Length: 65
Length: 475
Image (cartoon, rainbow over all chains, first blue to last red; front, side):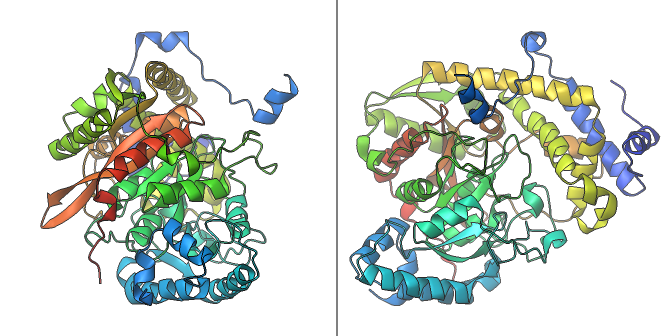
């Protein structure tokens, strides 16, 4: 996966109402690209067999028991 | 007993002497306050010392006990809490300039429960900004490790680790999102328990990452951890995520031993090349000790263990950015530099990246539970190495540096936060580093609500060793 450029990261910020400027922009770019790489590198075979589990609060659980 | 020696007692021993009226809460509280005055200028473990309130509470405890109204093992015992928990009328900063003037109108549930148990609040303890763990700038002073002042006391409950190890409180509370109780416990030679998510109320606790945050005890002994947990655990109508189930007697079960228990040593943690050889040896020896007491030992695999730190980072970044979304737009530059970077990263993270991290979390949780179907308790190091030097300077110079920071070289704790199971750190040795002897720890993890079992295993180990009796020589 190719790294995002600072301009692309700036656009992601703009999309959520955050105007990222230097010097923070460069560091956020490093940080986001590192995280993308670390998560992208992990592809266990079971990945497509699971979905995130919503946490069901105890009070909602007990009301259906 | 000499007044200056009182702070070195365990919380349980001090509580017993107070119950027998051999020591008064006023004597004990004033001994701790004097020790804080003498030493905390070097440690910066406290943000706020509640001198007047503590002495007033101590006098009230003394009167109550004299009238036969003893409330339990923490009555009259001085404690302190991470500055992440609301305290009525006492500022609660979260270790941040943004909350420097925030004075809550009520206590967090855990603080209210400790108050009801008769414990005496000495003050509010220093921490990484908003419990994020990466902050370098501490607006209320940088916390130092009492075993070596140049070293990190552990993040993010740094003050809880430093103050408890230096005997500036009898017991303390920390908060653990990715390891923030077990990390200071490891770095400072203490017992720290991350309780089962849902066992302890989070009402009135400043959030870092709602799906992983939980408060718990950091203490000098397993017994102190048990009595502190006893006071704070249990259902709270203010926190819908607490379980409404009976709280067992943790202290009574401490002495049941480990005979017949099945321990699983986590292969990936023990074989990781980055684990300091003396840490690995100390943990192996601790497991052998428990085997000698009658536990059986098997090897357990958590294949995705190495991924846990990055997954934790992704989820923490998004959840904390959501909590701080207003101030990210209005007061961004008041945060620590590294916190700005982490929160902004979370704020703009692509949804598919976050969703994949959540799927990986599900798989990690499944692997932890699979391991816990084969054994009763998992065993591994709390950290790959003893306390590191304090960080010098903030900021990121490259993607590789960011990657290194996130890959969890030191952290072996996050896997249990992702699974939301209880995990405990107990000292298992000392390693010589740069002229100092630094503590290292055994980490134990168990099934949800098996917190008492972890305390029991840790107690069995602790009672057969003397690591917990060592004190840093700070004067």
